[in-house]
Each structure stands twice: as structure tokens, then as C-alpha cells.
Amino acid sequence: MKAHILIVDDDPLMCRSLAFHLEDSGYTTATASTIQDAFVQVKEKQPDLILMDVSLPDMSGMDALRLLRRDSQMIPTIFVTARSRHLDEILGLELGADDYVTKPFSPREVTARVRVVLRRSRGQVQPPPILRADTLVLDLEAHTATKDDQLLDLTPTEFEILAAFMRHPGQAFTRLQLVEAAQGVAYEGYERVMD
Image 1 (tube, one colour):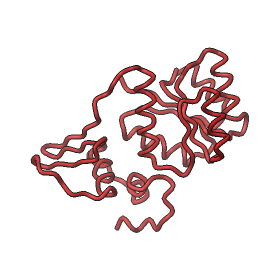
Image 2: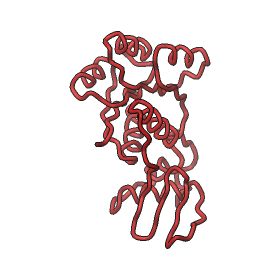
Image 3: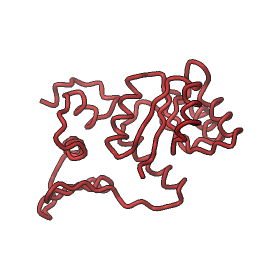
Image 4: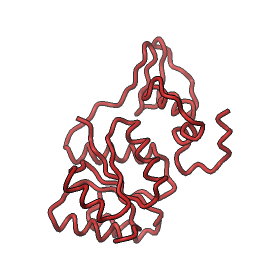
């Protein structure tokens, strides 16, 4: 069964990007732009994990986590925020957050942290994610690619683009989607670099 991730962030671009990358890694997602909407979704859909910004329009993520924990909601939670002060990170972890990631970040990093937190919360070891297409094999954890049992020499960017194609066979991608798959949502370079 696929893990369901609730993304709570008032930035629609951030929500779309995180949802794209998490779904690309096999998770289902839902998004909320306010804490009020997030609480409704927690009750209705019972997510396996929450990715939450600390700064939200109706309530801080820290206060929301306090309320969740007070109501015995022990849903694993990762703060994803621009607040990079060491004190904020310590406070978030002391309130019960399972992890704290500061922006900018790579979606691959967030996906890896989600995988680790879910594994810990379920108390199980998951097999390493492997993508296969005929004789082409990508090991997403080891970052290796083989074709006909021969190791391919791919750059990290080439590896991420190939992984995106293998996760969604037959799907057309925009240049921006490929840049985000390869470089992350925080990439601020020239998007025509993919040409």
C-alpha cells in the first residue's frame, strides 16, 4: 500500500513541486494551504506523514504540531521551511517533529527523508527502490544504472532525468519539469540548459 503524504504549505509552486516528486517516487499526496484545511484532511484521510511549513497564514506550523500531539495524533511530521535559524530547528524537533529541512533543498533530499521517517515510524526496513525497463536497471538508493548488466557512466543530472522517464513511461515532460526532476525546485539557473 502506498504511503499518503499531506503537504501543508501556502506556496502553490512548492506544493506542486513536492507533490510531483513524491508521486514520482510512488507516494500519494494531498495538499493544504492552511492549518485549518490540513486538520480537515488529517481527520478525513489520515495521512501517513505530514510535510509542513512553519510559517502559514492562519497558524504557525509549530503551534499546529503542538495541537496534533495534544490530540494524540502521532503522525510523523517533517518541517519544510525557510526558517534556517538553529533555534527554530531545535524547537521544532523538541515539539515532536521527526525531521526539519530548510529551503532551498533538493526534492531528492526530501524524498529520502520521507522514506527514512516512514521506515522508522513503521519499524520496518524497506527494500531499496529499483526501477526496471527491459534490461535497463536503476538503483535509486545506490545511484547506479546498468544496461545488460553493464554499469552506465551517468552524471547525477542524467540519472535523475532517466529516473523521471522510467517512473512515468510514455509521459511527455516540459523542460521545466525535467529541470526540477534533475536539479530540484530551488534551481535558479537558465532552464534552457536542458537543451
